[in-house]
Length: 396
Image (cartoon, rainbow, N blue to C red; front, side, top):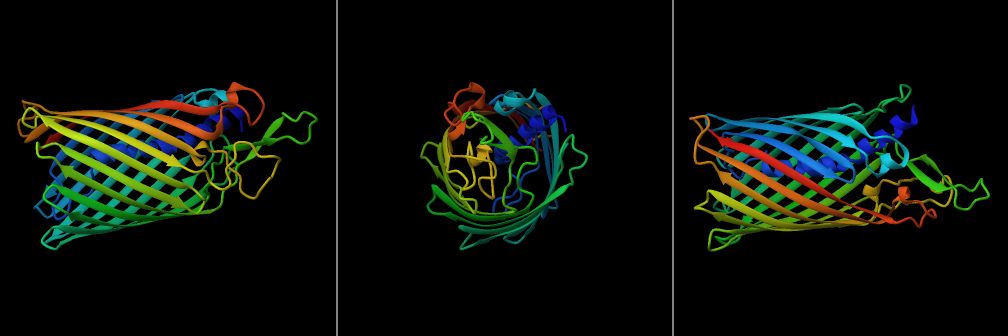
């Protein structure tokens, strides 16, 4: 396989973490699950998203349509795509910039029966070297006078991994299972809390088929020489997370929203995420402003190293910076405006929304090899990124 193709594809898989983060931000704006015992409104959302940071640019549209049937069933369909162009640190070190496209489709339905909502979800995504399908089921139940809601969910996924430019590479499988239980509780007339516990089991080919780790080359007389070998990960990964979310409604119609989440997995990674947001309505609710701050930190996987002492230094080897020790700090600004006129005549409400997040990534043990210098003493890597989401929401 040509070196340029191999190294460019390394970056394709390394930014999947950013894609997941971006998709999570989009889905946070377009919730796919109904609140307790209430079906989602009939609604159309049309979004454009842009991620720009670390030499990578990801952008594309997303369209979500939801429709109620007989006030008992809500069906939805979502199309999401992103186009990638990248000249990230991995590309600059060994290859040339590249482009790639990914498409994802989601279908779902909710059924309301008394105070119970049962939901089915299916998603399928495709890119040049990765195919993924996920199906899930969830159920939520109100009790204690509708002040409490208990939700249970289960999802199963099947992914297929291939390798661009290498016809001899046999397609590899990944199987995923996700379990979650969530409890929402009205504490006072102004405070609502939600506690969620989640567990994920991944099995199969979990490492990157392109990525390499670097190690000192003990076959030469120069102690500063280093070489590369393929990454090797365990074929199982068990992860658990617990999250506490809350929203407090202030006397003047504004609100505070907070979240804390702790994550740990069988690879030795421990991560903490904390976020605080302030939401303030203006002009009798026609204009809403949002300001938020988020901090994320994690420890490295047990088998991660920026520079191994020699070839085959241990059974499992990784140099993916997303498995290293790093922190992320981000600030976000958002504005939503209810349009005073109706484009379609039959719409109940139309809003235009713009959200911007600025993120700073600081890596504690991943070094910038493009800067040169003594191996293992190069400058530590860091970069800034921006995420922009512009969307139109129509209730009908």
